[in-house]
Length: 113
Length: 119
Image 1 (tube, rainbow over the protein chains, first blue to last red):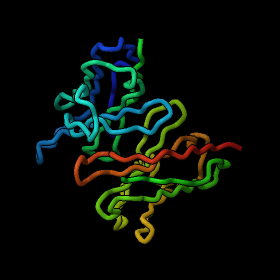
Image 2: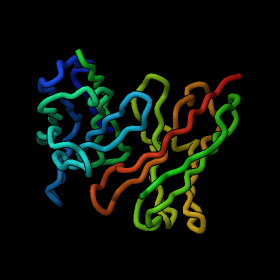
Image 3: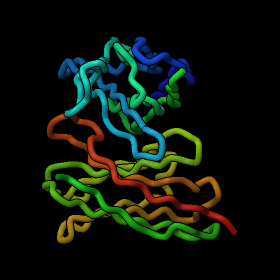
Image 4: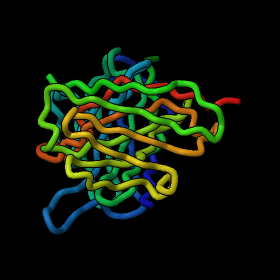
């Protein structure tokens, strides 16, 4: 199985400040056949189901604010929030879908200072 | 608007069979894969498996021997059965759309069904 490792596991952030979450995979998530990198990011707000933020490394899902961005390559990926807002609190997960079984990172809990 | 409505027994005894069903509204059932994901209390997300309208499925090897995912295209529903449950299967179970057409990812999630396994 591909192991997804996130850091940090807890992230206190002041509103208006940027935030960055790292995700590292045990194998490359780049598919040379189609040029896509199969890492996605989800946010699970308190008491809610997860929802999709970023797919295929850097594409924002429908309705996701442009303060969220995804980047990286190969085995190292980053989710960035340019200016954190109070509504961004929750647990962020990276996920790989280049190979079965689909696997998730452990999650990073973002909290407001 | 696409909605996933899920239901099933929330309290099981050890060794019983978990059975959940998810109904799909507002989406072309035959155009996507449909997945189950679970989350143990206070823990992360675990993919269980997926199925399409033809019944073609993939499952997590960690659960494969106990998991059956099935589909009823006449009702736009898919189901999960997990047999011989133990306390380790206590979790919230989500049904999820795998948007193979556009994002290629899990773009629609059900509200989740909390399942507790306890004697």
